[in-house]
Amino acid sequence: MRQAALVAGLGLLIMTIAAPFAEFFVYKKIVVPGDIVQTTQNIAANHGLVLAAIFAYLAVFICDLIVAWALYFLLVPVNRALSLLTAWFRLVYTAIGFVALLKLVTVFRISNTADYVAVFGSDQLHAHVKLLLNSFRYEWNIGLILFAIHLGLLGYLVYRSGYIPRILGILLTIAGLGWLIYVLSPYLYPNADVGFIMITFVGEIIFMLWLLARGWKIQEPITHS
Image (tube, rainbow, N blue to C red; front, side):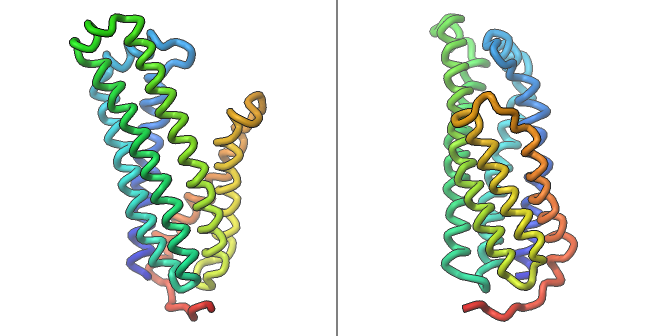
């Protein structure tokens, strides 16, 4: 269990570094909302940076697999069946993320290969890039709904564990609700400003820090019925 806690903490730490790099430093810089022509030019002009972002996203999803495995073993003593279900929600989310990432890989290829540019022409190329970028974002958002459910279940298991502070379970559940509200906003309430909800994601960081700082001191629990 102590090893599982440390592995989960390290996996979350890598994700905390890789995800902001790919999402905010690269994607938000390269993709210009409402201007697909400029976006396509940015991708072609910064192919090294875009490729680095793709590998950063890939690292995040690989760490998701590792974290799902580690958290399963960490929380098995609470409830084996529910711990397995919690892991499966994260695994399915990760699978959806991998599939969505392939759209970004295709965008990279067609934007940096002269043959595709010549065959498609500028208008069709821009249309393909826009479609693929939107697919990448929408498909990943659908996966994040499953991730939100994962966090809710994870929070419940942590709360009941007895060997992890209950406040962390509450914070993880709040983070799950935050993700659910944030991801559904473009579909259910597109005009609402939900940027403030991102503060709830801090619960995941606090959980990661606890795993790294205190995970190696976890005491063997009394198994719940």
